[in-house]
Length: 298
Image 1 (cartoon, rainbow, N blue to C red):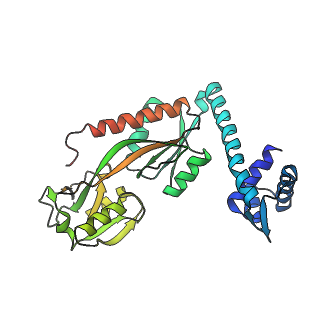
Image 2: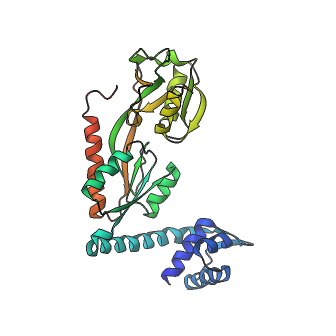
Image 3: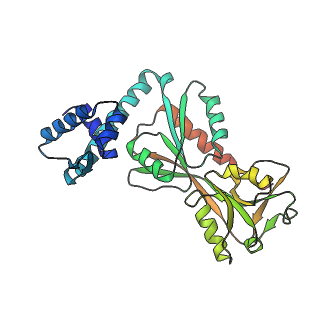
């Protein structure tokens, strides 16, 4: 059994299509098909059910996939560990985030401590993040909400209060606190369903007797503030997404403790480089300082 066979098998298993897998691997379809065939001959069983160019993992393939992923994962961890020991200046930090509002501050602090370390950040959905974690393709994920799993370590680093952002000329702007029941006739800008705090904020509004009406739905809370300033709508935003603007006022929510948890997440078996350890310390220090602030609402 060859390493190349395993790599090809994983790509075909992921895409379940010969043409697409060949294109992704930059090889010919015939070469890919022959490699998979040799692997099946070595194992003595078929790994796929074939319907034309479309493939589907059978029971043998599904069982072997888990082992193959684990084997390649461990080999990649060994490669990273040796690179970290022999050439620490060439280590690259791979990150994935589902929430990016605090990321610029964290990366700036990390740059101060590790100016020569390269990093790569991906903004992903929750499903994509879990896939990257299980494949061992990222060092850390910064996520809200947190993710649990047998192979996943999850450390809650910040409990982020949800506040209401309104334009300076809004009827509620002179107040410091507001009840959800006061918002039933408002138009909102917010994140999409399934992103950030949207789901439980909507549930809280329904409990208060109304369904929030959205004129805009995006994927990142920080992008909502300019829309509030432009008086497109008001917004529920986490405190870490606040943007100091003269024309935007932030109000606390009365009688409702709406918060989102931000977590630092990593695969239990992934090798953690010295640079990655440094990044984790920066994240914990940053959110520790945020937690100690006595007056987060302005």
